[in-house]
Image (cartoon, rainbow, N blue to C red):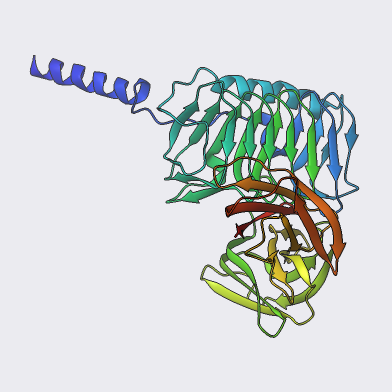
Length: 410
C-alpha cells in the first residue's frame, strides 16, 4: 500500500513538473528560418545605406527585393518564389502560431523600459501600444518568451540587456503588429512579427527579424543572426573627447576566437565611415579580459560617431554598434541664459538647418517656437508669445541623438 501511494505521488509530482507551472519553457521551432537574419512571408525587403551589415540569410516570399548592394551581406538571398523562400514562409507562420496558445507566467506593462524579466512566458496582453524607453533587462539562464498583443516601438538608444546567464539565442518576442527599432537601439533576440519590421538609422540587432506579413526596411544597421556566434565577445566600447582636442577610443573583450585584429572607424552621418586606425591581434584566441586603446589625433568637429570593426583569420568581418562623441570649441547650449521675456535667444548647434526642436513649459505644455535665422553657426530663435518668468525646456534632436536644455527667463 505504501509503495503504491509513493508511486502515485511520484507520478503526480512528475506530471506537475511537466504540465504545470513548474514546466520548463521551450523555445519555438524555427525550422528553416533559424538561419535567417531577416525574412518576411509577404512584403517588400529594402536596404537603405551602404553601412548596413547583415550576417545571416535574408529574403521574402512575396514582394520586391532591393538590397545588398547597398549594404553588405554575409549570407544568402532567398528571393520570391524560390524553394527556400516558400518553405521559410510556411515555417515562420508555424513558429509564430506556436507561441499563441502558451500560458502566461506573468503580465508585463506596456512600457517595457525599466522592467527585469526572468525566464518563462511574459505577456503584455492589452491593446495599448508596447514601447521600450531605456533598458529592458532579461536575467537568468533559460528560455524567454515575451508575447505582445500590439505593435512594438523602441525609443532612441534603447536596449535589451542580458544578465546572469541570459543569451540572445534563448530570447523570443511575439509581436502582434509592426516592430520598429528606434535610432541607435541595441536589441537582442528573435522577433516573430505580424506586421512590418523597420530598423531606424544605427539600430543593431543580435538576433532575427521574422515576419508573417509585412515589409522589412533597414537603415544603416548592424545585424547578426544568433545562429552565427560572434567571434569576439565585446564587453565595452567607448570614445571620449580630450582637452587637447583628440578622442581616446577604448574597448574590452572577454572572448576572442580566430581574431585577426580590429579597425576603428568614424563618421559624421552614420552612413559614410572612414578608417581612424587599426590594432592587430598577436594571439588569435583568448578567454581572458583584454583591453585595447587607440587615439584619434584628427577628429571631426561637432558630433561624430565611432565604431569598431573586427576581422577573422578567414577575412570575415563583424561591425559593432557606433557610439557618439561631441567635440567643439563652444559647448552646446542656449545663450543668453537667463534670457529676457521677449522670447529671443540663440542655440549653439551642429546642424541649425535640419535639427528638430521642441519647446515646453515645465508642466509639459508645447509652446510655439520660430526660427528667425542663423548667425555664425548659431540658430536664432523666438517664441511666438511673450514668456513669463520661469523655467522652460528646449529639446534638440540631431542625427537621432536627443538633448535637453533648460532656459531660464527673468
